[in-house]
Length: 123
Image 1 (cartoon, rainbow, N blue to C red):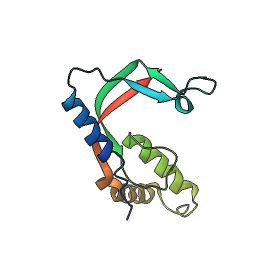
Image 2 (image 1 turned 120 degrees about the vertical axis):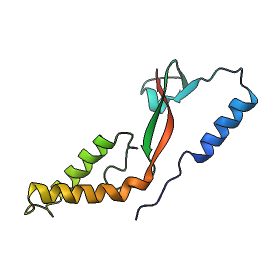
Image 3 (image 1 turned 60 degrees about the vertical axis):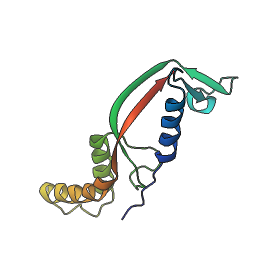
Image 4 (image 1 turned 180 degrees about the horizontal axis):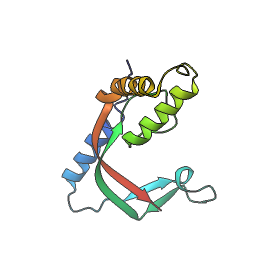
């Protein structure tokens, strides 16, 4: 089975506490120059375009693409199916058999999809 990352528990608690302690303060997002631009001379850049929504995040180690955090189930399913298809292990499977295999693999990740409040930032 996969190991949960629990990547947002501590940060969420800290944010809730800060909002509770300072309800009148605005929330701003500052992005590291490494995240938002390659040629910035500033170490932090203000991200003025903020959007908030309820979403989901896959909170576990995964072998599909370990360089990204999945926030879209359809994208994850497509990438997982591509990885399985490219492995060559299922070349002899019918489309129906392959779909069943993909669904079985997806089910292993189901417990790790977590509802979150998303803060999306753009500079």
